[in-house]
Image 1: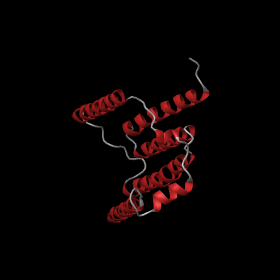
Image 2: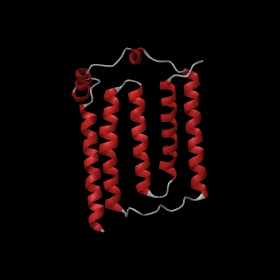
Image 3: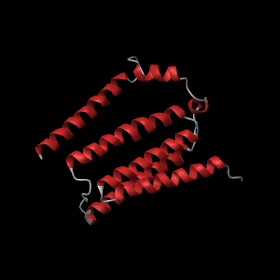
Image 4: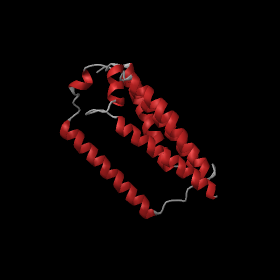
Length: 170
């Protein structure tokens, strides 16, 4: 079996995603955690580029790595100091987290083994036209996403207002 360049790149991106995901949830400095999350999001965009989903990769970089992470960093600066350390987790919480992670991994493994790694016809059909994606995102009909898009924007606005109110009370 010959290893291709895309398999090597996928392996590197997978290692980056796993390593920085672990660092994101285990570091005690909250700003470092946000920085590690940025690397996870960028590596995920790299996987999308590798799969030739250019639009999804661009959305990943723009919306998540650009917008959401900036919102996280602003909320960190508004609610706490950049150098604050989170308190060390108790042994009970660490065991509960480990059990939750093992349970989640077991469920994922069960689903993968039960269903296999089949690729659906929708995925193998190639990339969808940008006009179809635009109509699906901004349409109001069945299987179109304007209402969830607006709901998320209202939720983000509420988060920003909440962060400002918390910062003003200090």
